[in-house]
Image (tube, rainbow, N blue to C red; front, side, top):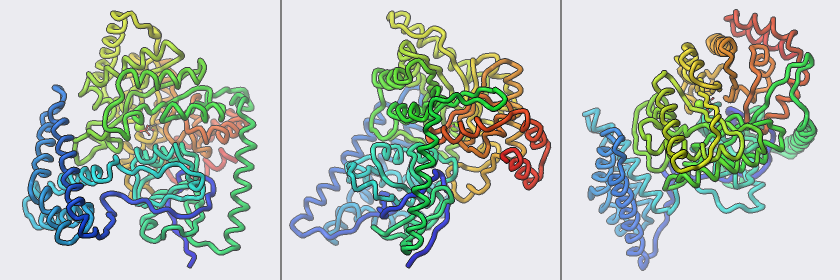
Length: 575
Ligand code: PEP
Ligand code: MG
């Protein structure tokens, strides 16, 4: 029976293919019976997974950095205790033996029983420890699968027909899809600017988030149409609908090809204002697509993706190679590399920080400054790579002057160490800061005097200004780049930085939203950075714009409060 499901389209276009349901270790665990002669082998498999996780915890504990907060070691100890308790390390083995089932299932059964007991505890602190039990169990599940998180199957031709259907995927999961050619992916959870959605856009395949129950309603291999532009999934379509969408898909592809012809055209308005259109990338491999789409620089290299999907951390040489490769492939064009923005929804495998509000916690520059030794490794790698092209360093989530001062001090220390070793780097390397916290936007003077450039991260700026968790699909509908507070903050940043003669870019998802291109242009933005797939559309819009016609309308928008009036003015700007 055919039916439709609605969500938030995060990457446009149409895909037609067959559903492939993606499991999540915590939510779905396979249950199968183990033949009697294999039961002891299954128990041994379980014991071995517990041993692996125990060893991981012990290594983590032994390597707690001196500068790490005291709770860090305490958390590892707590997790070790939970793991060593017989309720987790012994009882599942009994379940395997009694029920002759697989280890994952036994572990899940025991976890559910434990969690039910926790629910009955009155003490709030102890009840909260449920999360710790789940995290320890997830680690053992991972060890059982022998894989960190979700790992897609090896790339095959057949996957071009596959639409991945998942309850939830982390940004680390999605970035692995870059080595694949899936037709599309859709998830139940996620918001418009969640990092999962952000990475989805870079894959340049239609994708939809916040579908709520897609994973439950769709069956394996079912035929699906994904309309990423409208955010609609059509399950089991009839022949007529299928034919209609095949036609639309074809038209969409032709339009895309046509736009690619603009690759080498400068992005200049009809009244002669030239704009820089840069690309956002996650990995050096993305540079090829940026160049293909005519990017005149990389405006945001999210370097933290080098740190995900692995058990260790990239050392200085590995990072240096990645930055050098991206820079050399850009052939002299600027490459702005953001220092790692880890924390919140992008956690490394060794991260043990459990906080109630991770987006407000130890994230981005805050995290870097708590672990200066790790941060110095990245700064040295960036400086070394700067010798091979034009690298700019970008600091994420700045909030106060001391963060800037400390970062510049660490950079000076990194330079000094390279000087002592006679290693060359670009002495004139530029350092910029991301403006993504309202406090930074309002007190811009804290940064304009110290930094060479600024880049507005509207994904976070909107999250923090409107108080909407960008990963939470239940508040995703509140995401509103036209909110008067956002428009006025943007205008303020552009004006203040302009007066101080500090260049400003915008690298949040707003930059790639073609319906906002003219508005941003009229507010004074001259450097946009977005996922490569959006570059041709945005360029075409700029080529068709006359700045002096739209500026008065944009000024009116800054004074308007009524959402309908704002939308009407935007429609006139885009007419
Ligand atoms: C932003 O916040 O707008 C941004 C570009 O950074 P990220 O999306 O990686 O947080
Ligand atoms: Mg950000």
